[in-house]
Length: 256
Image 1 (cartoon, rainbow, N blue to C red):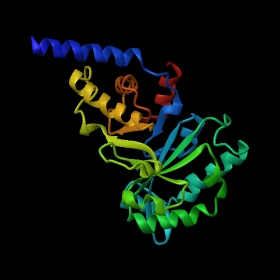
Image 2 (image 1 turned 45 degrees about the vertical axis):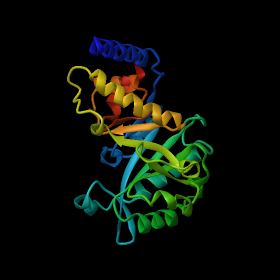
Image 3 (image 1 turned 90 degrees about the vertical axis):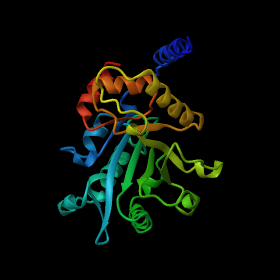
């Protein structure tokens, strides 16, 4: 009888998740490892994505965009792939990243080398792009190797940090958290076969609600990158849908 009641409660809560699902658009889309796209930045930007990710290495005094040390040989710089296109977009749109001045973009910079010297180089770089630091519709969020939470305040105010749902932040520290991210596999082993179990749904919903109570947005990476998963994440009210398939997610969002 107790198990039956628990199942009924879980079912009711799941129905509530579907009933309260918020409208989604590509403003809720995150271009994971965007630099691996045939046309970095521009494909996601033209689709109106709300978040774009670039992994960076500090290599011989330059910030190189790459997935691993093997890709460093390509020598693709952060300037060429992201900073210069962003500046051009802001100039084109008269002070906003997108033509709609209310539409925001997160540039999620995933730091792969030591945090302090890499971020010092990033600060130095951004001095050459003052528009990026003062554009209200652009947020630069640091992920990967980050400073200690207690040291967030030592960095420029335009630099925000990717938060961890399991970390407890003071009110002051939370102001420097631009968004929250976590590994989907920490909460579920679902591979988009069948439906997400009621138990996993409740666990994931509790994480999403926790972040939303902090008035922040959340992204779950490493989730299955398929239509059934996108629908499930939207039902769970995950704010940013992580994808490597920009055009497919764009078409899917158009149907919502």
